[in-house]
Length: 281
Image 1 (tube, rainbow, N blue to C red):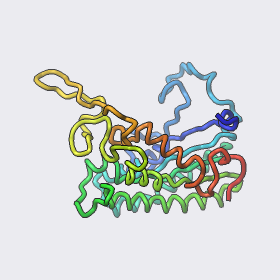
Image 2 (image 1 turned 45 degrees about the vertical axis):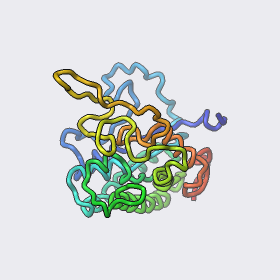
Image 3 (image 1 turned 60 degrees about the vertical axis):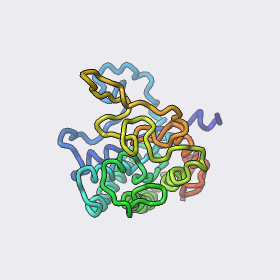
Image 4 (image 1 turned 120 degrees about the vertical axis):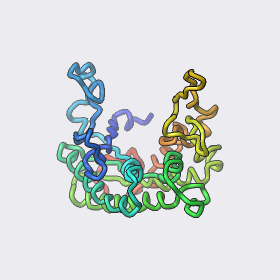
């Protein structure tokens, strides 16, 4: 491992905070603004068992803050029976919340940000299984075109937001990473990249996409009065792109990381190891 990485502190922030703060999507049961994983659990009860392991104060200004944003923000609207026009309409609100979060981190001393756009949500088993699409709306890769178009719309607006943030935060190094292109290439050319399955979940149960929202990975069903384990993983997870219908497998995530770490899909085009060394233009 390069010396640089031995010093780098990666802090992945839960951008679910955006969903919690967006009125159109927020649940009345979750009226708190954000969730941070800095205690010994998501809801630290006060024991602070691992308090001594918390990062030192200066780490926060030296860290690279990583955002992977968009998938949950977009699909949440569809699962609330919103139309595509309605989903598009709340994207500006989502991105306003996102910019506010980045600015808040900046005000607290954060200076380096690595921002991933959203992937092709129309290629995910849980989207393909749960949302209605017609045959004409399916592309050559088997993905749902309408949902991928919304993802691309979101990404264009996200890139505009990044440009605004660079103007507003003069001492910040902000890198925009085009994860969408990498993931779509992986899914649409799975065999070329060494994968056997592109749209079906490795760990799941039943249906065209091996996904069932009621019986997920590790799930059980009652058969003749007995619980039977049916949400089983596939035999070769490393050959599958999707793990449980929602998330990518470890092998697929590694493949994606290997493509983006060098900076070829970044704006500006610099490798990850240089993403927090100086201001980027």
